[in-house]
Amino acid sequence: MASDPRHGHPGPAPLGHQGGGEVEPDGEGEPGERNGPGKRNGPGGAAGGGRPVVRREVAADHPAVGELHTRAFGDDGRVSRLVDALRVAGAGPAPMSFVAVADGAVVGHVLLSHGRLDAPRRIVDVLSLSPLGVLPEFQGRGIGTRLIAHALAAAAEAGAPLVFLEGDPGYYRTRGFEPAGPAGFRSPSLRIPEPAFQVARLPAHEPWMTGTFVYSETFWAHDCVGLRDPEA
Image (tube, rainbow, N blue to C red):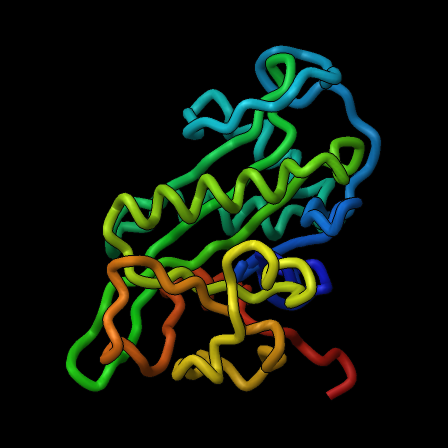
């Protein structure tokens, strides 16, 4: 998803999605997104100053995660609806979803979901990082950086060879990602700015794994790929 500067991501507004999606810099260059004030954000009550813990998302976190992305992206809930749809999408492996929790409140979230690489030798299962979001009042504390590191470690442990996203290159290229085009990958849409299309190559990646990245149908159904031009 994307909220612009293309961060973890969802689309029409560069994010975090798609990664991508979806999302954004927060303070120390952290994708946090744009949000508003807010204290109660999930099981546990008011947000406090404790050091956040990153863990797997559970069902009880869903309402807080939805609120987080709506505030972080400043949208009408489009990114939250994308997350809801990705959780239940039937095709491919189940998504991996992680939250950062401080004093019982969800303050950050990142999602890895299934995508495909149309490589010369065969189709390769890969992952998309999107969205990535951090509540505004928690941005600038390194929470987005920790969520990305946790997500990439989980992807590597699961044997994924590649993680793609659309995002701010100034942010993601110091956090494990590189420009995807020069590395041999083609974007799934002409509406994705070339600098925003990025990839993390993990230990399972092999040199022949190049080609076109393809988002899952869920991203297309929710129009969360690339940027729309309202004046076109």
